[in-house]
Each structure stands twice: as C-alpha cells, then as structure tokens.
Image 1 (cartoon, rainbow, N blue to C red):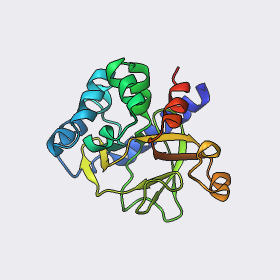
Image 2: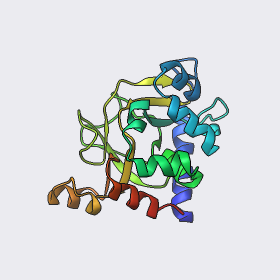
Image 3: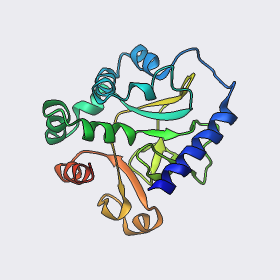
Image 4: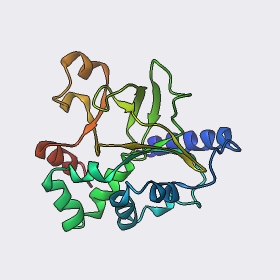
Length: 200
C-alpha cells in the first residue's frame, strides 16, 4: 500500500510539472460544477464528505473528475442512497467520490486510441478509452471536456462502480480476462453490497 501511494504521489508530481501554464479557463472545479446547474447532489456530497480541498482553488495538482449529474444520483439503488444520504456513511461517500477522480487531465486530445493508463484517488489502476458507452472496458470518456484551472471535468449520467473485472457480470469472459479493473454504472443491490463490502 505504501508503494502504491508513493507511485501515485510521483505521478501527480510529474503531471503537475508538465501541466503548469496550460489553463484554458479561469475557474476551479467546485465553481465549474456550480455553474452547470446539474451537479447539486455531487456538490452537496463533496461538502458532506469533507473533500472540498480536492476541488477548490487551493488544490493545484491537475486531475480529471468524472462528475455524476443529479439524474445519475437519482438513479442509484435505494439501498445506496439510504446508506449515503440517510445513514450519512461518510466513509462510503468519500470512497465513492475518490473513485470518480483520476490523476492527470484526460481529454479528447490526449487519450490514446489504444487506451491510456491512469489511477484514481482510491488507488485503482485503470485504462481509459474514448467511446460512446460508459459500460464497456475500464473507463470511457463520454462528454465534452470542461477545462478548469486544476483539471478537467466530464459530466456523466452515471455513478460509477469500479470493481475487479472478474466480478462484473455484464462483461463477456474475453473482456473480463483482458481488463483487470472495470468501471460500470452502479445499478443493482448486488453492486451496492459489493461496493459497501470494500469500505473500510
């Protein structure tokens, strides 16, 4: 675990140096999310979780946020909505949010056709691809980039569940064997149970 954290730190440092001076907009993630008018639940979740520092102007290290919109949160299974917003399980909420934030800035210009290796802030290593469907492979860019001072935001209609591919029943056997980690939309009670079982 210490080695993984060191790798993540080194990756963030390298990305930060290469990203300096490459800002396209004069705003930050929290401000940009507020401006969309479609991410009120996500903003509330960030504040409740205590992770504001990852998304405000004090955070200078670039990252990519796959931002579930309000409709995405409304589609969550009741069991998870109750766990997050009724029981106020902040550990689960933090883990959920960290699974949506990735090191570096992933845009249409820099994601390779063969896939780009990345790591989320929960420590899971995935490849991301450009495609039209968020379900397939490891991670897929689906929305137009929102460029901000400390990264890029992709608005998505999905709350993602990052899991070992062997446990993702939506995938065929060939895909499970090819990709070690999968991201899909969290839609079933079984996925909720699997997600919560990994919350420490």
